[in-house]
Length: 282
Image (cartoon, rainbow, N blue to C red):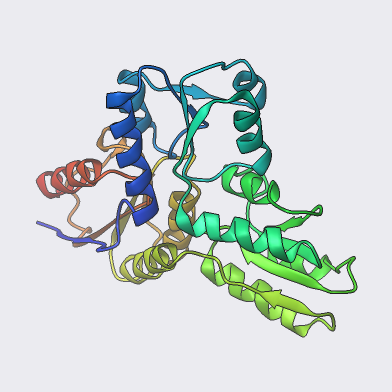
């Protein structure tokens, strides 16, 4: 039987657990419940919430058509204008934005009054879209050290650099190094959340010493994709799955050790199912 090493940091982080618990509590008490975008990036969790009556609003046009009920503001955060729209319409909302994301909103709102904002992250991710929506001037979003090399601030006050909470820690360090070599002033705030950093560090360490690494997470989940990227760089046999049904392994004598990690939006029961399945097959 292969040895199975499960990452201690695998699964729900504080912000996700708080958001999910709030959403399920609201689903029990609110007759008309919506969420602006998925509460978290996990199809299985969202399926359970939808079965309890939650309706997901996909964009601002759909939100404009809502005239009552309660709206959950997703864990990834939303632009300021979404809150203002709900307030103007007199619609009750419950903000389950991760506290670490909310901290970034406050930083960019204040810093953008004087200097440029640079966000290390994925421009199309809801968290980054939310951060952009709290800036008082047009920010710059970069996703690589190469883009950092090309950037120069337009403000004589320099720039403030923040990061998407789930950004690759190693990549952020490279971007910071490039910015520090530039001659302009830059205020650097490492806003990658502590849970993400621990997830990534532990996953990389485990992947480096196993024969097979399994990363569990939704494909829309940024932090899950980052874990896969990190693990596959050090372990040639790395699988990225959403649920146990996608796990395709069979008895293999060459696999002596198996590592398992999971994104911050992956429920414990899915991790348990995968772990038990691995133990019965290897």
